[in-house]
Length: 391
Image (cartoon, rainbow, N blue to C red):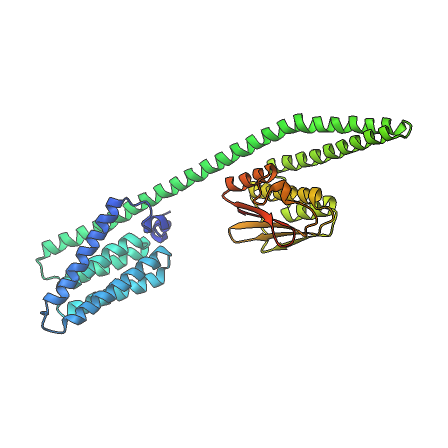
């Protein structure tokens, strides 16, 4: 356990600024500004503004700022040897400042190295580095030894307190993240439970009802077929067969909706191939899939499926025999569907030039609820429906 304490880094949450209040961030930057201003003032005033050697001091300040920034980034990434190397360069710069009589500059640098090492490094590396920085400060400081000893002890205590404070803040951030994840999981579990309940209700009511209708319609068809042939008998049989087909399609769509609610949904591209091959508009049809395939959300998947069904149904009703091209494209943040027919019927009468029909209106509302768009209208040849939804 002791070895773990000495070798363990402060957490990344503790080393970052995440979770800091605006007041603390303001205080932190104010302190840094004062220290930087003091170093710059020292670099200019101690050599005199007319002596160009102050430019060397300003350059040393700039070098220390760059090294301190790199040290912050390396410790945040938990890279020990690069962090120690940068800290050694910072101490070497402080020693150079001390040797060239920028004493205030050097004092600020030594103190900053000591506190930063104790705050951001594993204790096994932080304690020796802090001792070196504070030892150099004490050896080169010209104050009396009680003042120097008190200052050195205070700096060590300040660094350790900052470390404990950062660790406490990091622990609070981890607990907050865990709580958010738990709440999200709880909400997702509740949503899945509600979907399962709705699926059971649909299955018990609608699916059973459609199944019973299919049985009765099939029985009616068999009874009608036994009757003598005639015009009236043929018309009734045609209606019954059509009603049976509609009930069968409704049952299939209900089962797809139930699968979607339970999360047991087939890939969208497979559904489109089945839709075109099994219940296509009657003319030549093809499906093109572009982009890198990936699982879609249940909402986006259902929107694509419903729009494809609506578009193909409309083609089948108003442009029988027209060629149809279905294109599904996976984009970085969304999925796009395009259904294009070659014409041959007055498709625009059903949806209107701007897509004002009730079927398309419902699809447009579904897309807008998901933050997407739906466009439909005639082009030079045929009618085109375009859907884009986030996914």
